[in-house]
Structures are given as C-alpha cells and as structure tokens.
Image 1 (tube, rainbow, N blue to C red):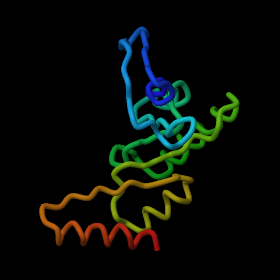
Image 2: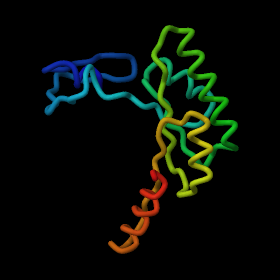
Image 3: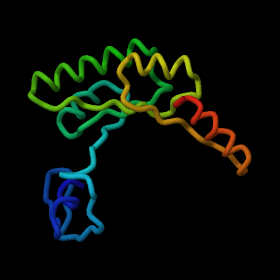
Image 4: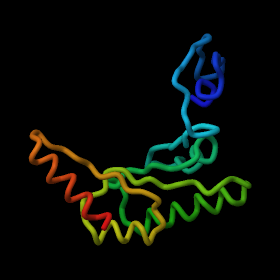
Length: 137
C-alpha cells in the first residue's frame, strides 16, 4: 500500500506479495501516507507492528483485562522507543458502550476506541450512535 500511495505507477515484487504496474487514485491527503495499523491479539503481533506498522489495533473481546492491554501497549511503545521509532498508536476495536471501561482504556493510554454499531432499523442505529456520542462528553 505504501508504494501505491507514494508513486504514480506502483510495482512490487517481494517474497509474499507480487504485483505488476498499477495505478491508484486519488492519493491520500496525509503525508507521507495514512498510518498503517496492524490488527491482532495473538503472540507476535507487537513484532509485526514494529516491522510493518505505525500502530496496533487489538480487538477488545479476546483481551483478558485492561491491565493486559496496558502492559502490552507499554512494552510495545518501549520497544519502539529503543528502536528509534515513533510512538505507535493503539486503536482498540469492538469496545462496549461502557463509560467506566472507556475511562479505564483512556487511563491505559489507548489512543482511540472503536465502538460496534449494529442495527436493523434507523431508530436503533440512531440510538446506538447517541449512546456512543455520550461517551465523548
């Protein structure tokens, strides 16, 4: 993606990815490119964040605790600093609309929380969006 975002005509031939010339427009406004978030909760994800990404995006549900997330994020950021890398962001996916839990994640230095919104009708959708918006206040 970084090659496609940066060059007018992108081509890449690597061990796991191989593509002939392609064109991708419009280019991202953010320079040099949008952040690359590496998702996952499993062992080794921190290594992949440091090797390929700008941030980590774990899923809330499989985490054992807020303390587990905080510890892993702290260790990831320490390793990034030791490697001379910028501070990786942490974007937590699938966070319940629970103000106490959101506050605990903020204290654990989670940069952003993504809330699930599932609704079959407009009224339920608006209700869930209002509940999520209330967490910002």
